[in-house]
Image (cartoon, rainbow, N blue to C red; front, top):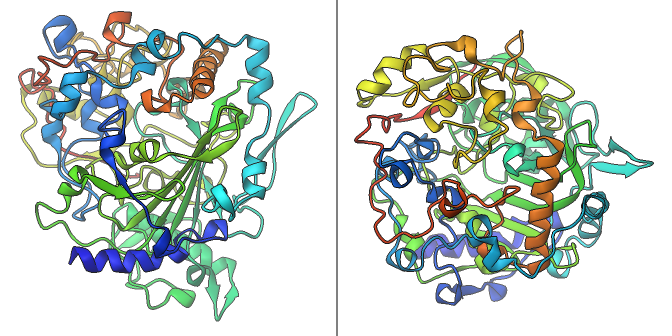
Length: 556
């Protein structure tokens, strides 16, 4: 079974990165020896090294782990029930011996000591220079073989940013790509160093009727996909899409009429492009700089089978994995991933094998995603979501949507508050006692709660943002999320940019690309683990805050 799948995927890779205009061949396939990596497990991200409070205080009071590790969102092998990872730290022996490998986040004095910190003027000049267009121009050739065919969407002229190449409906010229706005995954906010756009493109048959492009057909198929990944099944009514309400069909429309609709899955050929930017408060449209930190790309190769137990989790423990000019497969090998990152001079280059394996951690192997993604199933519903992600700066249409909690032993502490929870962020902030997994972003606390000491239901059980929603400070009078929740102050934004620029100069991505404006390891006053000798349990089960079994957005 597994060998047959590899034969199919080897053939598909010839067409898998059609966005770049080029393609690989089976002869070019590379299998990389993992033993050559500095970090033996780059697929275990920085967030997994958070202290729940147990190490620092002896008592767990924060559980940010649940947003990624719970009961699987879907029954397919792209998601795996892994709530045990909220209960215990499950680091491999090699990691336990070496300690937290993401030194850029916790001990930059060890990895970046010889790299000077840029001045405000230097960093502002740097981030307002374009590196996207050069990569786009060279797409389909050499190192840019797999770079997606999306032109830059910003320009910076005469001291001002403007949006380009995007029409009023989010379409990118005549490429078939479309940009959309979504509600960020909890904690993955620009104020924590991650600011991005996301584009989707369905395969040609979904865009055409009788071989000719048909915008109405394309919009309908995009709406069907949106409803499918949000859990609407064939025969059920999907409401409020850009093409109105409709009964979900068994098959897609147009030239894709023979492709079945599968709930919780994108159809084969679906592509995503995901540029990550430096932060620039001077961009009043979206806070995004002209310069990219990374360009990420993915393509769905085939529908994923159901997870029958055991699945293919052992793939992560293989001694070798596929890599070709920044391209890898996810764990279930039905999703192809490509990524480009800055070289020392700031030009985009394919990520190395070690850098690429970092991407595998999130896309197709954990419970917190839908079909290996974080974005389209969190899209702002209907026509309102077809726009560049602006974090509510220009159009306020993101609210703290409700979620469903599924069966499971909630535990006495959570049972006390669950009836009061009105929004996903409300729960995350209270469960985490802050706005990031490490509780290291001090300025966001006052943006969450009118009293920054009253966020956590564990630390302030009688007065917090759950049982006293009048404390909530991140919603405006109409219930929309204030942009300042997502976006950092100018000082913090440029501080994050400066620290990341040092990583680029050192080409030290193997030590981590997630940085704040200052170190956030335990020894620096933060909440990221460093030594792992005696780290086993997270402590959240003992405190009764572990059992958010599953969160999944629904729109009311």
